[in-house]
Image (cartoon, rainbow, N blue to C red):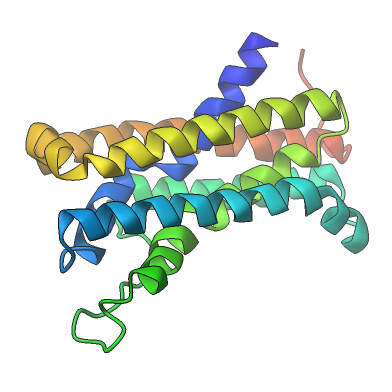
Amino acid sequence: MIHTFFKIFLTVLIIIDPLGCTPVFLSTTSHLDELQRKKVLKKAIKISAVVLALFVLLGRIILDFFGITPGAFYIAGGILFFFIAFDMISSKPRMTKSTPADSENAQDTSLIAVFPIAIPLIAGPGILTTIMLYVSTPEDGIITIIMLCVSLILALIIDYWTLRFSTLLLKLLHRTGLFVIEKIMGLILSGLAVQLVYDGLCRLGFVQAVV
């Protein structure tokens, strides 16, 4: 069970990618002072938590409503994870749009907290797919969901403190350090992506599982 928890937690943490969020967060909030930046971050984390909680509660209902089997979603999740991993390895920028500094809403911290920081920087399609993936698992469903919730809470806490001290981290690690860490995380995620596709094919009966 501990092994399963660490697997879920590591997956959630890699997908949320606190270090990868750092440059985008600093760029998006560059026109704000430290107090405003802290306020934006707190609100963004709260909004992200609500969005993630909704997907934990409604994920299985959504899958059942559309008749999507766990095997099919494993394959879909694996493909999406592979593209995310490829972007991390090839250093492509995150699919986020920043609010222009010269916009009349540039000083609206509530707007910035919602978009692009909470959605899609923190609560993006990758982590939402991860949630749907684990809530679709029929075996030990309740235990898996509990481990998923704990993993999400821990990941959001890590994300908060990472972004809270993002300026300091950038000075300590430099862009080269962030670059190397993101490549390693991308490689791990690519392996997980292939494993998910394999598990999905096994669940659908196309491939016989190798023990």
